[in-house]
Image (tube, rainbow, N blue to C red; front, side):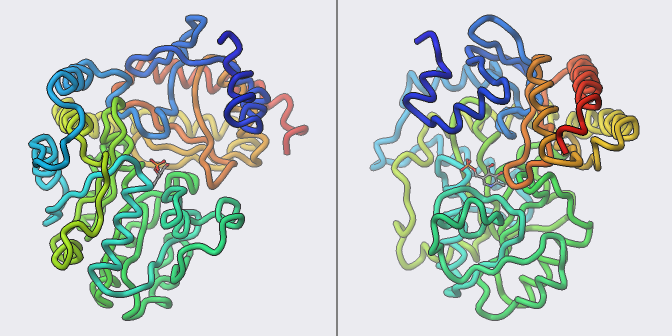
Amino acid sequence: MDDILGGFEAYMNPSLGRTYRFMGLDHAEHTASGAVVVDQDGSEYLDLAGGYGVFVQGYRHPRIVKAAHEQLDLMPLSSRVLVSPRQVELAERLATVTPGDLTYSFFCNSGTEAVEAALKFARGSTGRPTIISTEGAFHGKTYGSLSVSGRDLYQTPFKPLVPDVIRVPYGNLEALRAVMSDRVAAVIVEPIQGEGGVIVPPDDYLPGIRGLCDEYGALMIADEVQTGMGHTGRLFAIEHSGVVPDLLCLAKALGGGVMPIGAVVGRPNAWALFDSSPLIHTSTFGGNPLACRVALEALNVTIEEKLPQRAAELGAWLMPQLQELRVMHPELIREVRGKGLMIGLEFAAPGIGGMVMSELFQRRMLAVYTLNNERVIRLIPPLVIELSQLQDALGRLQEALDVVETIKEDLV
Ligand code: PLP
């Protein structure tokens, strides 16, 4: 098919296709490596969106691709009757690299499934109904995850949602304390809100949640689907706070940019539901040998290549440059914030962010706005990106801002 976007509109999602066209995103991808995506015409795009956090190790990291080939030739999917060694190896590695006594792993295929599992494990292990979540949160789009997410736009058409969910403002411990009770099974929180607009909470927030959960006998769920695997400067963002959650959700970059995989890692208290029924939560494809072998190699590459450290160092270089851009364009950029190489640029209006994205695309650079806050463009590049590529990206951003500066009156 020559007209790929036309095909997308004809056979997939006409409305989204029109949006792509409007944004100037009318080229189809063909191949990629490192931090560069190549389209069907051979044009190269510098990728600062990193698949919304999937490509920590870059596109097609040679070690991860090799691991996939080896497992493909051995046994990609499990018999599901015999135990798969690849699952056990990955679970053991996760128990070692996650904080505290996070011990057991359940594997699935995506971030939303990891959250679904965590919610069930929390209710099932505590015998309590209520889940507390935060405004602006994004936990996925299946029913349970959607029910604990924080944007009405995605929830309203699908009501009634899962009951007994209370939403409180993110970053506000007093609001949380006010709704805690002995009915609360869990508090679910992103250590840094990704789709909410890259919101970094106050330093005492995560320890405060841990304290309240302990006081009321509730579980703490850390959703690290986006923050996990290095972008914030630590392998898991929760490590900045010293807190050990009861359940840790992972996906995206756990698959090394090669395979879809999700995981929930839990402390023994969060695994109590399996005591009465070992098959109480299962998934046919979850934990398949191909995904687990790839995820193990992805973890090894992330740790051995010191990618979290690289995120911290490159972020420390990039952040002041972006702050300088904010000073140069005070009417366009309201705030620059984030940790490591998970950075949000908040614009004065959604139209400005959209125009900057479009101008960046014309300059062959990929960046995306955050799903629950369209005023924010997030930069979350592969952590293998070179300093020279970041310098290049900064130059393209500067050019895009200069253009948008001349037409900003039409966009507000
Ligand atoms: N949780 C967080 C924090 C996310 O950022 C996302 C996706 O962006 C999800 C869950 C859902 O992941 P998935 O799209 O793989 O279902």
